[in-house]
Length: 124
Image (cartoon, rainbow, N blue to C red; front, top):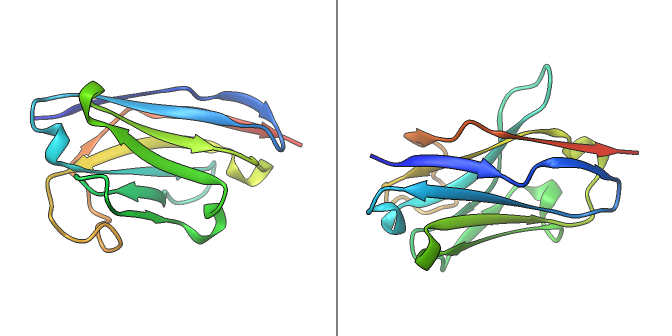
């Protein structure tokens, strides 16, 4: 069983940066893939970024490539999403999710464990 807690959201002006954290409990978390999803009001939840259990492979939504970076610190059982060059269209509730699947991170989109989400608001 894995429990996930996101933090780091907030209000930022366009062009600014935020770093989201996903802190996990559960001794097997270091062996799990982790992804960030987001959901804007009135829209479906969408994949943003993912990282393999080893940290060696990552995947990103096209619109965030070059601006967002996902990385993990296994010692702290935490996965981060560094978001630079934020745009108003990045405004959403951001969720982290985790799963023990060994599917390539570019294919894995079904996750068993989810956090509660953190709000990110980007003003223009």
